[in-house]
Image (cartoon, rainbow, N blue to C red; front, side, top):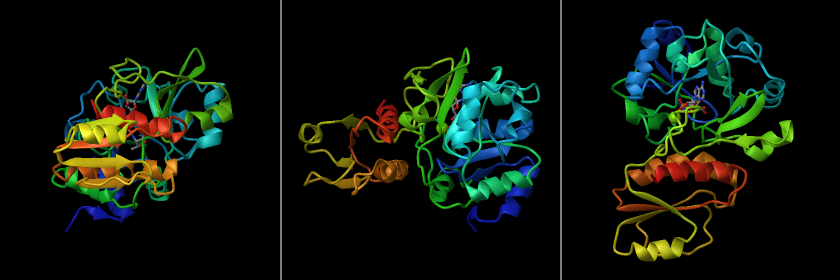
Length: 318
Ligand code: TXA
Ligand code: MG
């Protein structure tokens, strides 16, 4: 018997027993455990081989639940919650004492979101505690957007992946913190900047490519295939440069008619950034299985979700 299952009651039982369950969200699959169980939280870090300095996102069942775990909610945070929850925006807010230091890596803030996936919301409603859930991939590897991706990574390490189908958004949530009550984007993600600015006005981005004290998870190399990957606007030139090698192509639409390529994936025939985002990680998983010498990825248009996709591809090339 595989570990992929749609049985929510089974997930409830495992989580109540301080075990881990991989859960579906609209963004990527998460590796979930009880935020109040030291055993479960340590197991999350161990299973992912994730360093303890990298704090976790807390997943809650409702908007009202927020005040149980955070102390101060700036006006603009309230607007974001109203506009986008449930949905792919994570807020970094001042934590209540009840939130364990292991979750926040000792910080006085906690990252929190209400995911937009009916099965996981149902699961959260049936539990007496929120779920800590980092993406369900080993540290620095490609995030999972299908139950099978998680199974491949962790089939010998966890007992269950709750099967909620493929993730519709396909890249992680946008993370927003507050400095002097002003909102700042710490990680580009599934909710584009332009859409956020429509709701709350101008917002700064501190999406550093190095180890930043604000979001230590935003390491330069992340979301990475094992195959060497490059990102370019100039596909034809890059292909020429690497002639003779086994090349995999990751391209936005199929405008070019490119021949002599060993493996090619088109992210969106329709030229649609949302479709491209939802296909991105599965495409990288597939490319990584082909034993290629190099993956040449096309840089997408630099607006909306294109910015977030380019961010992930840049980190995949480091
Ligand atoms: O879409 C998502 O957000 C997915 C799904 C499963 O919900 N989760 C996810 O978690 O991407 P993870 O652990 O892969 O990324 C969490 C990010 C890390 O970059 C971490 O550094 C940042 O959130 N983070 C967590 N707590 C923080 C805090 N208190 N201050 C700043 N950054 C924080
Ligand atoms: Mg991650």
